[in-house]
Length: 99
Image 1 (tube, rainbow, N blue to C red):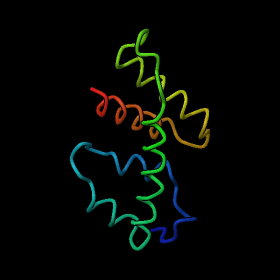
Image 2: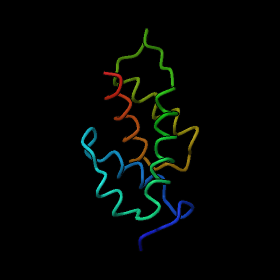
Image 3: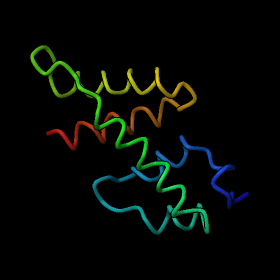
Image 4: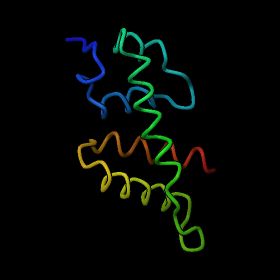
């Protein structure tokens, strides 16, 4: 079943799909999956990713990979409903952005 309203969307699924193959764009598949709600779902995904990018690891004590793990932990605490796959995708996104 294709979910067409923003309220019906599984945010974990949206994050994983949005970030699949990142940094390459997955826009066509994302828009196909979420249909008319794609723009609103993208907005929700961007809010989560922007929040993740504001997490401040202790760069004096952490490597880039450790910082990615830390971001996953912080986001798990803030958003306990996110799947392990979504949290991993967020951590990978963070480390790619910070490299």
